[in-house]
Image 1 (spheres, rainbow over the protein chains, first blue to last red):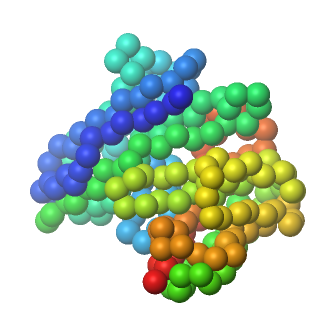
Image 2: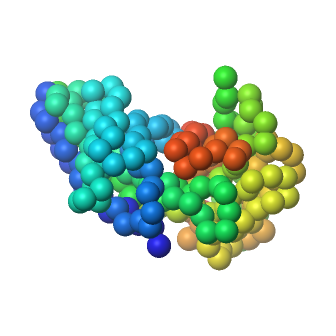
Length: 116
Length: 115
């Protein structure tokens, strides 16, 4: 079945440091890939997505490129801010067998803490 | 615009007591609806999935049940809570008939502690 593996945290960085959170996946066919962010005490929000190989999703300074050859979707940001402190989830969406609706499979999440 | 409401935000219940968590979506019709549970160190687990009124799929065997009495209302219930039911419960929706490119939209969650 589908699965997502992302680097375990927690990740602690100083403000303006470079961020990489690794994500690899296993799926049949051609899934869509997503990064969600969860700020403390809140639900998840979509951060960015990519729907086919070599697509780059970007939002709020974050980027991730859909790499089919390495089955990866690593999240990067050039200069993190204290306000980026949150839990980040990598996810993929693949077709459910026998249906036309789609199921999202999540990684376990990576806690990022950015210190001033 | 579409909004999703989930309540209560926090809940402390004794073992063996019943549970009812409610989720409603506004601004869209006939959405797909989902209940997820987030346990520490275990990521998000899909519990239930619904494509329409009274059409609910259970993803994992457990002590919980779900109902969808109205198009945009999704309820998570239990007759007798277990300690292992503690966690953060998230309701989400997506556009009915959407492609796999479409994201989920999450509520703010309910923190359930079973004591």
